[in-house]
Image 1 (cartoon, rainbow, N blue to C red):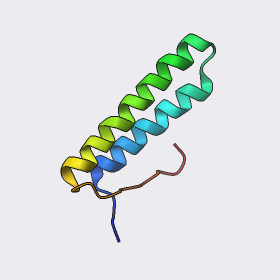
Image 2 (cartoon, rainbow, N blue to C red; image 1 turned 90 degrees about the horizontal axis):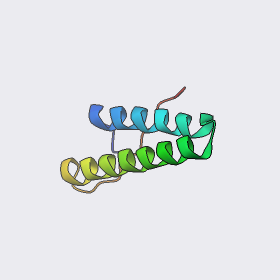
Image 3 (cartoon, rainbow, N blue to C red; image 1 turned 90 degrees about the vertical axis):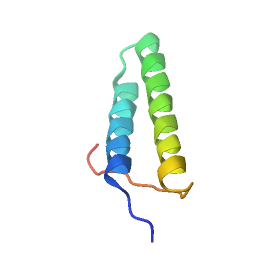
Image 4 (cartoon, rainbow, N blue to C red; image 1 turned 30 degrees about the vertical axis):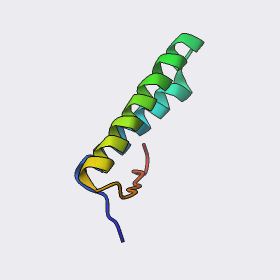
Length: 65
């Protein structure tokens, strides 16, 4: 069983906040900006997983984010 490291949990929190900004965006411009940030954060987490977990799939979604 693979458990999430603290950095993975942190990235999941950051990604969750970005997803909330996408959902709450009042207009198309802010939604597009939030979507780009969310994609960048997801890419950063994927890079972290690749480098620090040997490419292992690590999935962790904090509740309430």
